Image 1 (cartoon, helix red, strand yellow):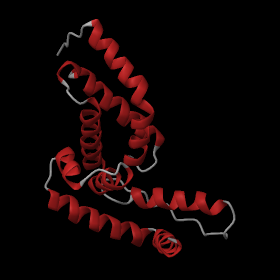
Image 2 (image 1 turned 120 degrees about the vertical axis):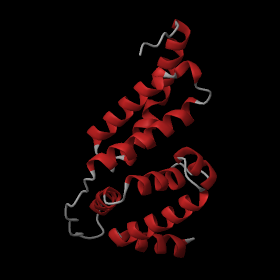
Image 3 (image 1 turned 30 degrees about the vertical axis):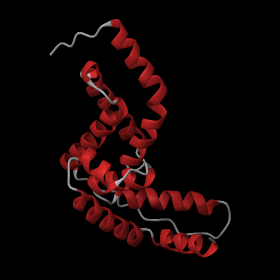
Length: 173
């Protein structure tokens, strides 16, 4: 399929990619549970799909985000691979604790399904409403609520340090 793109559309697309790539790379990184190579592949594939339909897209951010979530879920369904690396022992409250917590969270996110991860990223990282998440993923608001609830419970089970951090932050506020 050949797509004819005029120079104005091409320039507009390149400007969009230049301006928004860092934001979407962070999103891809989260969706792939911290796998840099998979995140780069996800973003590149999604941008290629977006470029094909560029002249018909009203909201490029929304469209690209939706392509990314659907692409990641599609890849996940084909692979069905899960990270199983052991969580390192915590050495103490020195400066490495934040890094260790980040690694533990990445590992825990990697053990969630792609849909659970997508819903958590949309709801809590991008701070989108349940209805927006439902529209982006093509599911009901009830599915977003129940999946988010189960995903958070599973995340806390996999990474209990998050629960302790949440309790400490509530106590200090």
